[in-house]
Structures are given as C-alpha cells and as structure tokens.
Length: 465
Image (cartoon, rainbow, N blue to C red):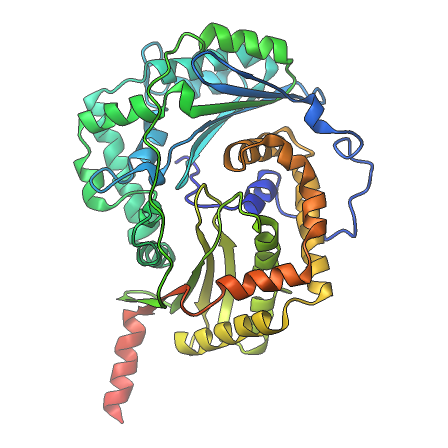
C-alpha cells in the first residue's frame, strides 16, 4: 500500500520530509551549505509551451535525484457524485499506460535502483520519484507516458475501485479517530469542498463511471495543471532538454474550472456526537483559520507549535500531566489554497469523560487568548521551527518537498529562503492577536466519540443504583 497523506501543514511537510525535528537550537550555525549562500540563485525554472512548469535545484553531493510532480488537484476540486476521484487517480497512475503495462512502473523504477510514492490531499496530488542520476531519462519516459497515455482498462479500474473501497474501510470506517475527523470536517464546512473527505464518500466510490474518470483525467492531469521539481545530481540544461523531448509534445488542456466557493463565517459553535464501538472516548476540536499563504501563516505555525508540539507543549502539560484527563493530545493547522482548519485531537483518559477533557482544553485556550504566550514559549517554538527547517534542507528529498510546497501553495519558491527571517519577525502580540481571532466559541466545531461499550457499562451502573 502506498503512503498517502490526507492532510498536512507546511511545518509537517518540511519536518517530515527529513525526519523528526532535532533538539531546539538558539540559532542555526552558519556551517550549513544552504546557510552559507543564497540557494535561490542556484534554482533554474522553465515553463514548457504546454504550460508545465519545471524547477531544477542542482545538488551534486551524491549521485541521486528527487523528482516531484505536483498536480494541482485534490478533493477541493470534486463535487457530490465523484468524491474521492482524485485519490483514485493516485492509484491509477501506477496501473499502466500505453507503453508500460500494469506493474511495470514500479518494476522499472526498482530495476534502476529507484523508488517511488504518492499522496493526495484536499488541494494537490503529488507523485515522488527517488533514483540514481543514471535513471534520469528512464524516469522521464515513465512519467511522460502516464501523463499522455494513461490506460483505462475496465478490469483494472474495477480492481482499483475495490482497493480504494477497502482502504476506506480500514483507514476510516474501522478507525475511530479518522471516522470522527471525517464527520467533524464535514460539519465545519457547509459550502466549501474542504468538507469532502479526500478518500471519498462510500456511495461515490461505488458510482464513478468511465466517463467521469476520463473527463477528470483530461482536465486535471494535463501538463498545464502540473509543476515538476528536480533536486539532485542534475544540470538544468539536461533536465530541460529531457523535458522538451518527452513532455513538450503533450498537449495542454483548457484550464480547470476555478474553485469559487467561499466558506461563510461560522455563526456559532457546531457539535458532532458519535456513539460507536470503541475502547476510549475521543475529542476533536477545530477552528477555522487562514490559507497557506495567509499573512499570519508563520504566526499560526508558531501558535500550533506552542499548543501541541511535544510533551512540554501547553495542551500536553495541561491535559495529560496536570489534569490527567487525556493520555495524548496533538494537532495541526491545514495548509491549503483556501482558508482551512486548526485541528486538535484528544485521546481521553480511561475513567475520565470527554466533558472533563473539553473543559480543560477550553480553559487552556482561554488562558492563552487572555495572557498570550510567554517569551520563553515563543522562543522555543521558533527554535523548533528553525531546527526542522535547516534539517530538511540538508537532503535532496527535503529540498524537493519544501521547494514544491512554497512554489505551489505560496506562489513563489523564493519564499522558502526567507522563512528564518519571517519566523524571527513574529511577536508575542501577533500570536495573541491571532489566537483571539480564531480560538473563539463561535468559530469552533467540537466532535465527541463515545465508545458503545463504555456507554453500555455506564448505563448498567446507573440502573444498578
């Protein structure tokens, strides 16, 4: 099963691309190669005549290459009746094209010493290749063929439909945290398609037609709807020559229809209550927040770090260590083209109800809104972000992931290289002002999952009194 990301943040992308964050640093040392120069000048870009944009960042430390293709399509582009179709194509793109039958993409990649992966989110579908530079032309041939000539064999389509439906059962229907998350997001968005689950609703997975699939592919998997990035032991000249040779003749398509939906301001708290078989109660609280390129993007990253990153974070110390109402707490802020959600997850302690956990959670949020973060908390959060940032830029994969994120989500790859300065400019007041705007009762949606077994036992005790 391929790894799939259904949601992530810029921080998670940069940190996750290169492993877990290193211990907090007061300031990155100027020994890093990336820190010793301006890396932006090393990057070359070209847009082919068919609209595909290509970015190349040479790095000759090792004879390997990381290649990412970002298609600007995710569940945000779907509608009722075809939900989950973007995620379906994540599967189909590995299941045969005109010159490469099913299974050959992976076999050829591995035979040449490479590996590949893919993930789908609300906004994008990203295909990743990692390989020795000797396989560069082979990888271009493979990628070009599945863009121009993807196969739509009915037997393969039905097989992958079954695989996707099985994935939905195991990762959502049979997994309480994911099931709760899906219901909370659907309640939080009443107009915007961010309320659509990336994996799709069950009835839609069963109902995609061949016409749906072929029309969607033509529209969204066109070269003019994609951004390709290569980082590693390559030169811009050879990459652009191969791109022209293998990708340049693939015709552009009409631009996809824009997503115009705007989520209206939430008029009051929304609540979701789920009762189903399970072991422990779960609590999820979400707040509407900004987009990836929002003016407060860095302040939001730091706010979430203060609240949820590690056992010394505010929420962990309060809910787990002090009040003992939870065994775990975490969260992230979604990073997308449109305003999304700051999401918080709480696994409630055995013997403690979700009401107690919610009370402690809300009280801690109110305290942060009232008093703001301390200078120590803000400084620690900045150090953690800087550590993850510099650590990611030491690898070609980390560079490719970060470069793609800033080019696609924030509109300009050069913004990647001003991150340290932008983190440094964030003040306590800015974080507190942001908290005051978004961490309000009317702006939140609360989801509670109560295990059926626990509910039955509690009813038995009540009846025995």
